Image (tube, rainbow, N blue to C red):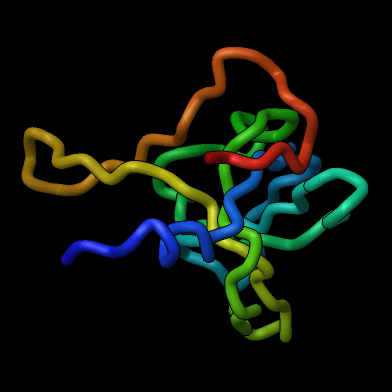
Length: 116
């Protein structure tokens, strides 16, 4: 399905810096991220289904693209809301499973920088 440039422009994609990453007690697949999006947006909580592929210490302090204008979604049993979506690539493995690959920025950019 094709979308127009106007539809694409509705997505607010920004670079966020992961300040803290942890696995909630109740989780078997999502990681809870505290992400800094700079002065304009501030800090947000984002849940990402990356626990099977990454450890919290592997992503803390790193930068990734996120969609920041998603409707908040309640996640888990503690009443937390995910306030964005981390972008990643899903690729097939040799055993027929899927594997998550995160984007790696070539250099550090300001938190909240717009992706276009």
